[in-house]
Amino acid sequence: MKKTLVWLRNDLRLEDNPALFAARERGEELLVVYIFHEGEKGDLSQGSASKWWLHFALQDLAERLKSIGGHLLIAKDEDIVGCLASLLEESGADAVFWNRRYEPEGIKIDTEVKQLLRKKTIEVQSFTGGVLNEPQAIQNKSGNPFQVFTPYWKNARQCEVPEPLPAPPKMKGIRLNSLSLEALNLLPEIHWDKEFYTNWEPSRTGAEARLKKMVKGKAMDYTATRDTPSLDGTSCLSAWLHVGQISCREIYHALRKQGSEVEEGYIRQLYWRDFAHHLMYHFPHSVKNSLKKDYDLFPWKENEDLAEKWRRGETGYPIVDAGMRQLWQTGWMHNRVRMIVASLLVKHLLQDWRVGLDWFWDTLLDADLANNVMGWQWCGGSGADAAPYFRIFNPVSQGERFDPDGTYVKTYLPELAQLPKKYIHQPWMLGELELATYGVTLGENYPHPIIGLKEGRQQALDAFQKFKQLREQ
Ligand SMILES: Cc1cc2nc3c(=O)[nH]c(=O)nc-3n(C[C@H](O)[C@H](O)[C@H](O)COP(=O)(O)OP(=O)(O)OC[C@H]3O[C@@H](n4cnc5c(N)ncnc54)[C@H](O)[C@@H]3O)c2cc1C
Image (cartoon, rainbow, N blue to C red):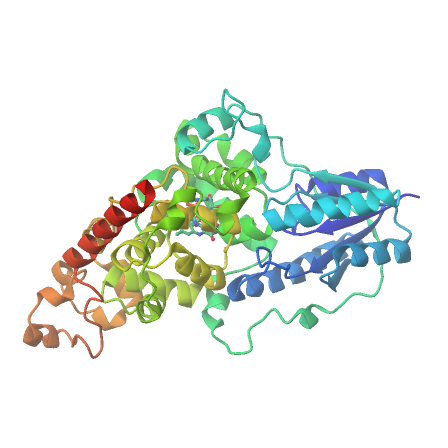
């Protein structure tokens, strides 16, 4: 009887799991393993919010495996090769299967593991499990990677996306000593996570419920509703997708049948996710440094005080502060608002995009290296297909456009709830006395703007001019 070790990472599911499926085809006895490791350089280390999600995703997976005769072995080890080697020895398994990951540090570890295990005549196989198409499968006519989304998408959408695979109906789980989930210490000691419990169901059932809503009509409305942060207009599937409790292929095939509107709208976003992986794979330097290398010369103005006010949602710009509070309370932020808060940080406040990236990394439940890096570099101007530096989002007009009656702002900033909608995005336009009648005193229960709109814009443009000179030197 052939025994196979299945090494799970960001693919914590039974359905459409090519490594698990192939291992089950090979033989009934499976050792299913999750090794918690932080990684040397931090690309693979998880933020606090992601760890919260991971805890429940592992718990759910362990129960689901048990229901079909399997068993989840949890380990914690920075020496991945050593850990896998001793598990193979103990279990008598002679093969290791996994689904590929694309973080530069992950690729490095996986390559080493592959080489070392093969030397020990262990069969090693890796599969495509986390993307619609492999990053290296999509190339331009000259055989190079794409750096602009639209041509990437035109090319990628011609490639077939394999149908999702079924979950194994049953298996025989090999039982070895496992760490308890609690031993990983994934949940925070201070209960800043209490609203996560009311907002999220971090299980496979939770993902299926969200997908069902999309299938039942939400995907058809997506283009009309996706930019209004007060509406539940997007799928909110990002955190499930990040840990792989649901696969992008499952979502793709569940919705594609709905026709071109859904393809051009919702499914296009799944290709943005693939594009982010494509960029991370082909330009690994971009996870730490500017994708466009000359942007490393950009004259950021480090200022911890400004950065901290931004993190706390105390910038005095209501749409920005509401976004930052939504992030802190719920572990998620609407995409439109992510762009607005990021723009204020990197442009008006001239803080390095990595300052924002780090905060998102720690507080987002869906923190994902590829998407986070692409999002921040897009906003900061240094990424592929990025917003040009001189295009500077105005947080007042963005607020008026995407949250016209202030519903979103009022949800997260109850201190502004009584303001008339004309002033909800710029309370400072009202006189002190009038503001007081609405229960607002600037500088006391709501901050003055952290920087003037004109001043911030000018500062950003001046920095860009300086950058151009530095680049030309
Ligand atoms: C500064 C910044 C940082 C970001 N950081 C992350 C991050 O850490 N993790 C993350 O998953 N997304 C990130 N995004 C992208 C996007 O905001 C989220 O994917 C989206 O808001 C998740 O909500 P949803 O699942 O309802 O998305 P939907 O609109 O329902 O989209 C469906 C799926 O498509 C993918 N997707 C959608 N928009 C994008 C996009 N712009 N880029 C890449 N993939 C996309 C996501 O996987 C998402 O779950 C970031 C965007 C910005 C501007």
